Length: 155
Image 1 (tube, rainbow, N blue to C red):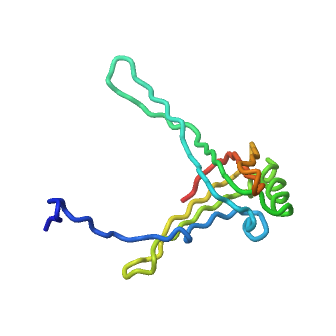
Image 2: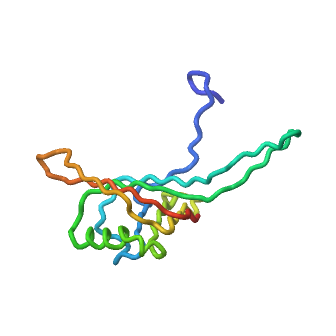
Image 3: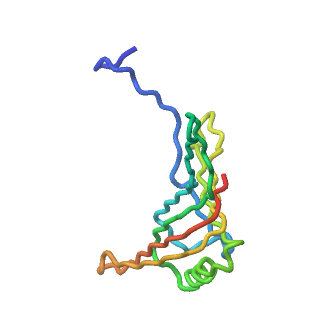
């Protein structure tokens, strides 16, 4: 049955709540609680080389190594937590144990919601850039932009 404008009505297909997303930093006490994270982005890519065989139509793909990068925007938090974060993630010697885990549960406790969601772990994380800014001098909130690299994305 169409709606007033002759279009097929939309169908509600589910919902999720924003408060179900959690970002934790492995290796920090409490998983990085106190790191007031407001934004995260990460990408993971692999190098693929395409080879063409002379004298045929054959194409070959050669997979190279994978690598990832991430960016985190946060509000500068309590000094002991920030210092522990810099010392842990900024030290390349800690990379073997540094993880960043992003989890997002799905559902609003509606009938049929499984609560299953998404979990991704960035493994071998190292902090390679830090930037600070103050956008509004009235409230003096200090924003921080972090750039990181990692060796594997595990789902």
